[in-house]
Length: 431
Image (cartoon, rainbow, N blue to C red; front, top):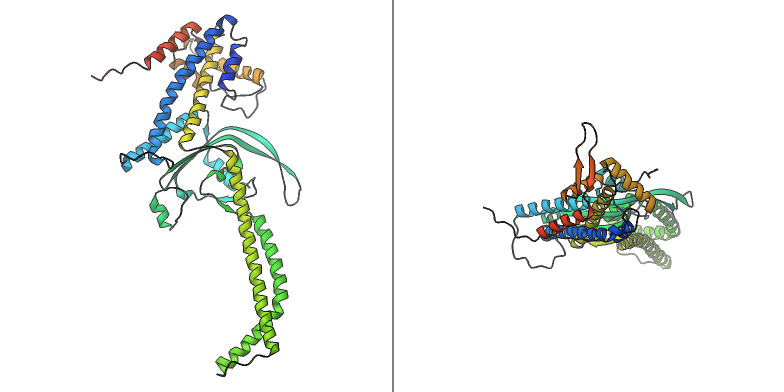
């Protein structure tokens, strides 16, 4: 099997579709179908209940940092408690992101985005000094070709990397930091934490996701505007030069007569009045030209801001506490699909499989059925199968890989049922 180089950790098939396709595949006989569907429902319910607890843990630990909260504050939180809640939140959320098959974006990738030319014809500056902490995670990446205009080539084809999903966590510094910089009218709350989820983000434009990103003109835009301003300025000064020279001569004459000689203001004749009018007109022309250039710069910056806003509007999936439900749902599906695939492929193997053989069998089946190459998380899947007591490991000779087998389908359903009942047993009080 020829596997694509950019295999993805996550399984890009909806849970319901995967269950249906497996139930009607050669892996499940007609007699087993009802038991398999029951097993799938029970497994999905177990994971849903477990991840519900994770969602509640995230919501509680995030509450002191939530800028959108509309709950009454009935209990003050000490700085030490707040630090502990922040650490707990980041640890739990990072774990769930990993379960949803996200991976952290490294500082190297972020530096690449900052230094690389933007695909949206804008340049951004991000002051990372505003953040106490920032974490980025991505899931799914693909290569894409786009057509770009350049100064010398009308259309140039470039290859870019696009992340299917990007999750962002940012903790702002406290009020003292922004007061020291005399920064007012902030569009965020100091010491708050933002959680955002985006889709289809080019790797070279990660910096546009940060809330304090400032639009700056690219070098080519500065050169273009500077060239136009210089050319227009020379033309204006040449046209207004005669008026300015005439007005300067008259003003010098008046200054010399009044200040140097101590005389009175000389009477201006028609020629002098005409020269003064010409000079004032020249100054007005120059002022209008400078205002036009400044206004052009402001309009271009507004255009860049609109480009950024329009782009993010259609790429934003969720914000703050709403992101938890999105990511937890993804994690729940990924965990379910990994266990389902691992269990079924072990079940259909008469003599059992090694971890490596199981991994290869699932990946080959995905290429055959969905024409999609995945990097199946075999170690994670086996850990969950063992935790749920759905597989056993046969003793092997020294140096040989362990053989894994699945418990029968009917027994697997009974074991899941016992696990479900155990969720609602009263806790035994500590002695």
